[in-house]
Length: 98
Image (cartoon, rainbow, N blue to C red; front, side):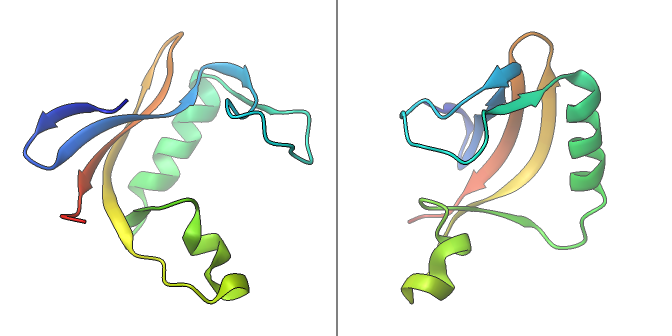
């Protein structure tokens, strides 16, 4: 559950620290994923270099919209990323009214 920061800002955990798999048990084509402080810093650096805001969407719809023809409304916009050692990668996001 995201923690409310203020108004429409929330802190959301993007990934846990270390090796992880989907928590919902869905099948994936790889054994899992891994992230640590060094990898997270690379992600944060690339995020900070973006010119366009990064969208927070519903059910990964921005990846699926061309296949299923449905709209991909923004649930919010990522403001910043931060690494919490031993816990994982977090985002501060501003949620849309929807």
